[in-house]
Amino acid sequence: MLKINSLEQYQSEYKRSVENPELFWEGIAESFEWKKKWDKVLDWNFDEPNVKWFDGGQLNITENCLDRHLDSIGDKVAFHWVPNDVSEKGRKISYRELHAEVCKFSNVLTRNGIKKGDRVCLYMPMVPELVIAVLACARVGAIHSVVFAGFSAQSLSDRINDCNCNLVITADGAFRGAKTIDLKSIVDESLLTCTSVKKVIVLERTKTEASMLAGRDVWWHDEMLNTSPNHQAETMNSEDSLFILYTSGSTGKPKGVVHSTAGYMIYAEYSFRNVFQYQADDIFWCTADIGWITGHSYIIYGPLLAGATSIMFEGVPTYPDAGRFWDIVDKYQVNLFYTAPTAIRALQAKGLEYIKPYKLDTLKVLGTVGEPINEEAWHWYNDEIGKGKCPIVDTWWQTETGGILISPLAGITPLKPTYATLPLPGIQPCLVDSEGNEILGNDVSGNLCVKYPWPSMIRTTYGDHERCRQVYFSTYKGKYFTGDGCKRDEDGYYRITGRVDDVINVSGHRIGTAEVEDAINTTDKVIESAVVGFPHPIKGQGIFAFVISSSSDNENYIEEIRAQVTKVIGPIAKPDRILLVDGLPKTRSGKIMRRILRKIASGEFSKMGDTSTLLDPAVVEHICDVYSQEK
Ligand code: 7RM
Image 1 (tube, helix red, strand yellow):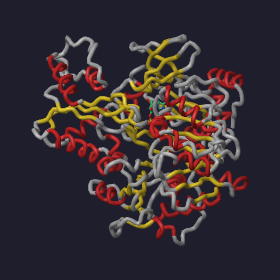
Image 2: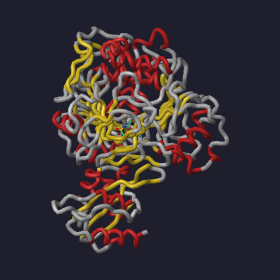
Image 3: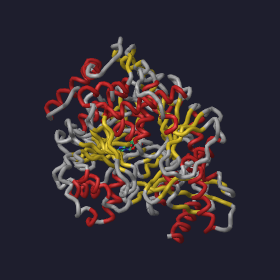
Image 4: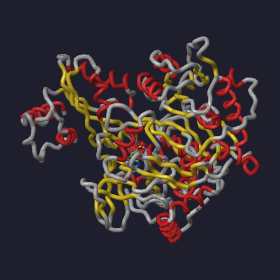
């Protein structure tokens, strides 16, 4: 596997990767275990789109994550699992143990009727069994669809139905901070509207009372009893789907982003090793939840493919107090630490006394992901956590990109605070103007696209390929459009400035404004709503909803709207502010002018810009008045 060790090498590899991408990626693919080598490295067009990497190749990703390591590092710890509660004992799982558990659970899946190509939904807490279940799906060739355990019953059933899952794997409950979430009862509610699900496997975690439907629901521990730890991994083609992960876009319905097997695998290990400059025996900790892409690529696949030891943490950064992360870093001697700007800001706000008791002297590399990091948070992270000695890798990527595309290589790329810096070798980003022309040269801004395929890119949106084409490949012909705005400075460094579409980034999680509006509109007495993002000191962006309703009980009504959004989507989409208004700024053609609402939501009343195309310009003044009264 290519490991870049210097800036000169980065530059020469980058050049090589652009001059001959197929040769570049072929060299990387060689280091994996294939059941059959590929016929063709790359076949592509961005018009349909149709992208095939290593076509004709056969493999199983779990043999690359597990089997191939057994002789060399079988007894090495794959995961140190750290429970939510400080009083509960942690667990450590070696590569050999993980392999045996995955094989056992693969046999359980087969016994429960799961075959290659079936979709399996996972709705679980952050426990080792989630990793085991994900890998067992991959081993038998089932397509996993992990749904973050913070989503509501309705969101869960939407996701189960969209891809017709046959099986759901869940737990009785989840511990998250001081809360216990009754996962099984949420699953029960969601399954009332899911006819494709034949079986539910339930892990015992919280010992919360769980109702078990005879013939449908079985316990994980019962199923694992007397099950063989031997399993022959299914043979998968390079382009067979590995997983689906739902993500929000600018329309109401989340999309099922589909990733392939070989390309995703290759990019996960390549990016992990190079961005974090992983060295054998480093202890790596990515604090994300496996319900998001970061957890898929940098808790499960990247580190396991590299044979790394990782921390898997069940809890939250502030429980039992804001020193929890640092306690874990010291206790497990973490070397590489990867988290989100929102967590950094939340901990920064709690004060330095939560850091003082800890040494943090094992840390070598710090990373961030999920949203633009602000200057203050960057410096705090650098000074207080890294003690000025740890490079910060600000990693830009997306659910659709599968892995990190633009990021410093730790200790190699000279840093600039708040810059994701440079593309990894093999990645060809470009900026385009509103006409779709590529903007060349430096010290420019535009919309961020990628003009050449990379192995871990999105293949389709499940069940609706046209939507994939439309959303990502139709805005700018021949280019993948990211939805992000971006600056390229005088040194050619990239700084991602945020979404240019109707997507809000709340604590690093993407939420479509249309999705929230749809949820709000299901509240009794809502006539119309408009949702925009606004700057939030901890979350990055908050959710601001302008609502027209026929209700007269304003105070309780706002709570009712909040509760409805929580019910329809989940607590992460709950609006931070709701303003009850009499009208919305609309153009003569009926389009809501979000630009104006965004200004008001961030408290800027001056320089509203051109409002002459508004049907009723007075509505702007009205909304500003209501806003000022509420403040
Ligand atoms: C990995 C992940 C993707 C969106 C993306 C951006 C934003 C992510 C950064 C960032 C600035 C970063 N996947 N984003 N990383 N913005 N700097 N380093 O987050 O699909 O959930 O979100 O997140 O807007 O398009 S995601």
